[in-house]
Length: 339
Ligand code: TLP
Image (cartoon, rainbow, N blue to C red; front, side, top):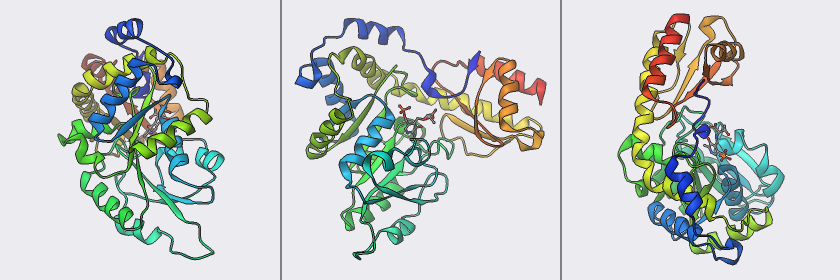
């Protein structure tokens, strides 16, 4: 089976497994796990933030960020198709008690003027705008890169209104690899950031949130409240450290594979690639085949390829470490034979 459902499906490398086995550990709730400390220090350095905190998942990291930045009754601004809004089971309402106000972006980028217009003024009728969330790369926009310039413009507005900016950077390093820009060119334009170790970077588990000392102090407490205070967590941090230090530089390979697959998909009858394919995600509208996405995905599965539905007639393909260029050629052959 060639699994293009997500970059979350990657299995830990030999080196990651060895690192887990050999990890030096201690009780992290007591602040005594040296491997966790090493990972957090390295992540903070790479992301250009004062401190970092290891969390179990991207969702947990985003939720801790929202909980830490906001008060119940606040309103948060975020993109209509953002993961926090679309895919986190309503967690911001369930846990943080905030309401969401969505702004529809173009290729994942929100218009800074629309953001400024949406910021609430002082009025007893209105909720306070407590947070602005960005996503980079933007998953539902097809792994689209949000430019540092767009982030900078939004951050400037946020600062003017004393509103923090959080970036869901589950795939931030894909944006870095695709643009050749420095990590900090992105992270300088936000107060906090979440990055996933377990997507393109290939770790089996874990995410990082980073921000200033005050934010991380509060976030650590929220993590504990949510049951995310872990004990000998070095065994899961060690593969994360390998992911962070060794796997970033190969993400461009996944982008090459995605571009190759895009070429094939564009030649298939009734299939239209609807995103730019900046990084490792391809979104295809398959309505021209007369099929629904579910049927298309089921048929592909029977031929040995896994993808996910992304809407009634949309299908997402995601390239990653565990699919080779040869696998992509095989997918191309299967697609050509059938469409
Ligand atoms: N995305 C998953 C699914 O949840 C949709 C995927 O297969 O793409 N932010 C972004 C931008 C994400 O794409 C994801 C996962 C998360 C956060 C959540 O990360 P986890 O799965 O670690 O909670």
